[in-house]
Length: 189
Image (cartoon, rainbow, N blue to C red; front, top):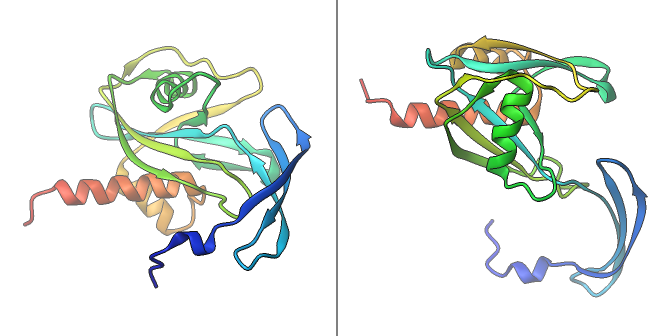
């Protein structure tokens, strides 16, 4: 059901306090006025935003990463990605992160989609781009970041989503969006 007047659902901030300020994440606790006039508490994580890249090599294969993710204590297959630094545009972040994580530079970025992965408890926004015109640059991961880069066709990557080998949400959405865009632009047989 489509709601025509979104204001009937709007919550209004009454107060806000910082609960935790970390190096990356900041936790807030707000008191809000609900649409029915009552009040409630909203706790959420402030995030600087991020960029992920579906990066195409000249032969059409994609650059993907293996990376250990501590909260889940396992290695995940992911698109190259990273957080937006202060003063950066998403495009600048995408170009920087692609080279830092994979050692490749892109001559062109095209926005694929924007996602909000954790709407119940975070304001994080991830901008997903397609990266074209790749050439070799220099891999320079952060001193606390370890990744392995590998290549795969888009179809093989989609198969890994279907079989549950790729479960990272930004990667799944990026790959599926790239596949849909590709299918939309291929001539009908």
